[in-house]
Image 1: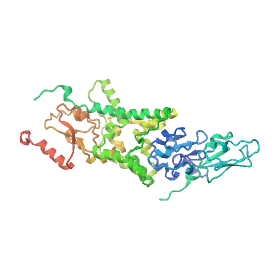
Image 2: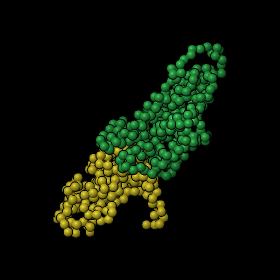
Image 3: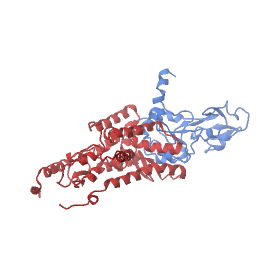
Image 4: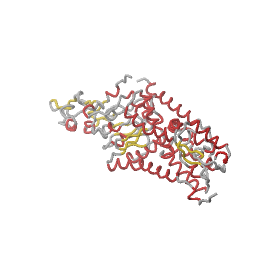
Length: 180
Length: 293
């Protein structure tokens, strides 16, 4: 990464990264900061307190909602998408949600390393057998069905480094470009 | 002339307004507790966007910024803005005077100062031209579009009060941007409602919408001793005797109506276009009383 980019990072760059996700139905990061009016209704309505509003350190993204997936994941109750007044969180259904994609770190996952028969991610997945299925007792993610809710990340017993588990949600869809 | 007792003479708009403001403040004060501890989600948000069941209110400035920056129209957003915009079109800046938590807190501070210094009126130490409000509105909209992010909606003091209460209840912490609220309340000590007068873009937008509003404070009786108490009590530093209560800046709080010893001032519903009204007022003011009757 270029040094210029590293300097510009705090103010203008998106806080969305691995396990740092927007709530369900979020528009791409391209327009998120402009469309969200920071009213905090999604934060207040979330019954699991998954959604956290960012503060001044997030630059232009201050006040926008973020989910720290490994701490409190999204339980896909879809209450936030019904109260967003600006359409920043589009009113979509559970299975349409694409907050990101769960990716298994096969060198860290104890099942893939052959050290244990853990299948926590498979057990906690709300779309079990579709989003995560077992292949020879090892978990495999299907990107066609994974909603990126982060329940697997939250449940995973292996912490590789702070904020990083053996299965992580990568917000692939947040990087889409918007066409006017 | 009929001598009336002091109490029956006065209107009580200030008392009603204080009740409305207290109720409006209690909504954003108690609602986070209901959300967090009771799981009651019937009401969400604060005075940036407030949802009461399926009835949504969106602050017009926030909505306009969201549309301007994202260049996308979302119908529920427009419908949410409808009630505040209609309120501003007909009644002017009543949100500022009757609901806004910043004005509420400033007013409590003012009441405390008057009590502390045993003074009836508070002096404004630093007065700027009133049209700065329009520069604040335009500058803020342009800055928002340049940056691509609605800065005011994040720094908006009325919204910040609600957000800080929510942060305190939900996360047991306060966000750093709450300093803005403290700065605004400190400026209020120098000049009453300094922020509201010159810097608030939301107040500017509501004033712009309400520039042809129906509800105004006007001279109802020709009798006026020109005691000047109305201009001293006005928290925005307006002079109702000069017709400034009919200008865009007035937020219809009714302080001047309450203080007027002869009940010369009163709320009036403007039925004619503005120019006719002012002309009519000026004529009736200049003419001697016996001639007009």
